Image 1 (cartoon, helix red, strand yellow):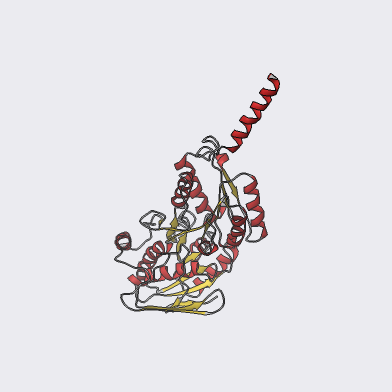
Image 2 (cartoon, rainbow, N blue to C red):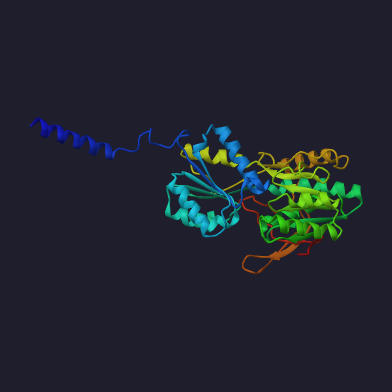
Length: 380
């Protein structure tokens, strides 16, 4: 009889425990959270993935995370390999998965739909808001503000060297890239009204050989200063070898091109990563769209190459930065007009009158400026 009662009591205890909510010990904490990252290249590119990985390291330090709480998937193509990488991160028990390349978005959307208990955060994308998925998020930053400042650096240098022709090595004909080179050009034009700019596309996010070729063709076409939206340092080293000047992206490139690289528009991705992790652990919803800016430190300029920048550059940059942060200076401000092509092939146009401005990344995190303006020539 005692044996029967003991078994019955054990069964009742087990059943009651099964009905209880997860204990505090079982809840995800800062000590148990696991984060997955999917990258299109690896940190050796010294550009895009390097910058994202640097953000991960800063987040790890800021939150006191261990190495085994972070799982990186590098050199993942924007195809079904992304789905495989996501599944591996799910199998590893990741609570939040960050995808850092534009072409990962559809794979993350599919995974988010199938795994509602995991958070999916995608940089540069635009589909989270329309997906209806509470666990799908887009994040980016107002890098166009830093691009504008970098354009001021280039514009002042163009005045100094007496060459009004800028060049730009661009990855893809997408809004993210077009927004970047337009804001760079507008910054240069704000200090040198006579500048024009030639843009050459590589049609790849990370192809150092093609980036070098496009950079060289722009320099050969008379561009005295080139900038870039592509992943490697090839445009910087090409400018150095060709006697031109350069404005970089994602990382300071002064070390590889000390006589050419003036500055770079750079990111601190940890601003979002820390925010997303802390929001998740607080039991609060991660915003569907999030975009940091100059004021938050998400976007900024790297150090100026004081040995070669034009006189007065630091002061001009600081004045423009303060005006952007205060709201007195709008990057995409009228009078301004342009036209471009939407993803569906239709024509996109915009006409901003004096006093009007385009609120880039104001509601959706992803850039949406998709217009080619006067003074910008697509040559490749």
